[in-house]
Length: 548
Image 1 (cartoon, helix red, strand yellow):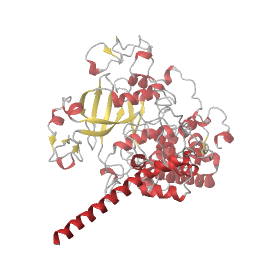
Image 2 (cartoon, one colour):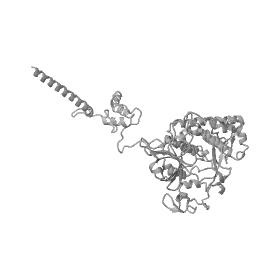
Image 3 (cartoon, one colour):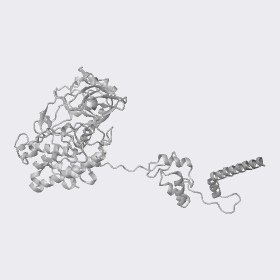
Image 4 (cartoon, helix red, strand yellow):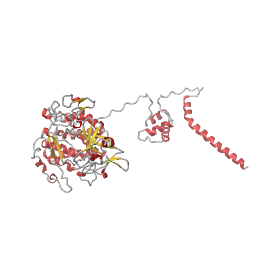
């Protein structure tokens, strides 16, 4: 009796299992049966329905398709489960048109050969900015005294690194760098040097600048040495084409701010600030910062193995995390506690193209009149004397020419970056006092995005002077269609180590630009437009066009 009950129980279990299998098979076959039923049965007198469009989405998408859409779609809400998608399609009414509309909200799989919709035209506000009349004003005609180098002169551009009277360009063509060959055969760093004149480091549309930026990130590094002087570690890198650049390694991440208890003179020098400063300088149309580009450098192959600097070589070590590190020699942050470590041997940094050698083009160093005290307790004279600018304007070279206006340009440039470390500046000696200020060493900019250091603007507030071209460009960059932060973002995306700036830094520039314009407006209200805004245009400018 007991054995009979066990057998009946087993038969019951088997029947339940068979019924469950049958139901699963029917559920899987249901979509196919529905599609066949829609096509009409044989012998049916009713006419078949109209054929569906060939690209209509099926009502019941396959599980594999849904999985692909779920895993690889970049659309918002693409992480919905396949069950929720099916439920949404059923709720839409179940028709082929409704299913197609629902499928249109997700990314579709496009078969090979299917026509793709044309991509939307990309807006290029930076290109539009450089086509604006304010960025197309012509320079005065250049005489021989207005160019730094004359290509047909007897000056020999013979790189010291070559250690031979002839050298090779990128195409391995040998020639003497005596001005006897075509300028097109010169390396890009030499084209940059030859293009320097009294009014600018480089022209607006000089193709050699973009090519030089590419060289900075692609040229083979043949030797490395520490730069003498300075408070923090910098490396001089020489390339295969004998060009040279100053390398500043990455010390902070993009989102880190300068600690509030740090003095400006002990702040880190940031590699991304050097890169951003070059782009900002170009957008402001100053063109007074040498070309700078970001690069990933292999610390083993491109620094340690090629350096002849024994002091630098001795500071290399392997960290407990098996990363290659070094720290070099300098006044600040050159110790094992502040070592620069790769991942495992890759390090990011900025490379700034060198200016011409001092033996070929001497530069004069000037003390900034609004230099800070660089002391923990003392204040500079300009910080306590509101009439300090009147004294400056009576002192050469600020008593004549454009030097005081150059200082105002540099002040605005530094304020937009938040750079408090501008103790000296340089000019090319050949051009005397009638030339621009070179905006070198910008590594302490972009340290704080949550704070605007108003003391940087003191020269502008005290002197109440500004170039008309600078003023009009600042007004242009405050407009929505030429918004400074958007232009900077677009320009910086071209760099190899982009993104360069944390978004709050970009937004801070828009805020600071409004502060600068308010300061100029207050000066105009106090002293009058003609006493504040200096007309520096050689020809009349259509202010209606430039201010639109």
